[in-house]
Image (tube, rainbow, N blue to C red; front, side):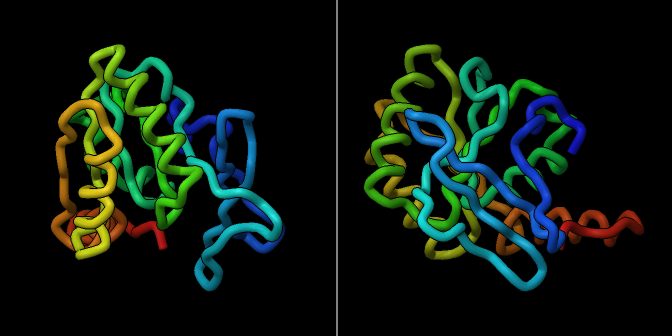
Length: 168
């Protein structure tokens, strides 16, 4: 959580839920809350994209379904990529606003020759996200699947094997 890429990309509410800000071209447009019992968006907010702080400059962009998946992926692949990867999370679905934002994001990534990796869940919905995202991108996208259902499951498994704990 102290990684500079994630600086100012999350908060904690009074109930202990993680709060992930979503942005559109105008800036902050909404937020997603996630906790042990609750998972959803705030009332009367717009869904945009959750992004890491290095989004505009990183040579590698990983797209995940949720911010929690992005954090888990970053822990699993910290030694492989170091700080050269940026993250973008969909917040669980792709609406019209998000399609427009993703098309712009992919266009900017293509302009700087960034590698874009779709790292959505290992399930039919994750496959559908990959297909939908491929239609928006001006370049070929790479697909990376977790071994379990999602990146948090993979991290939890690794932590159990090493005697640690998981993100729940």
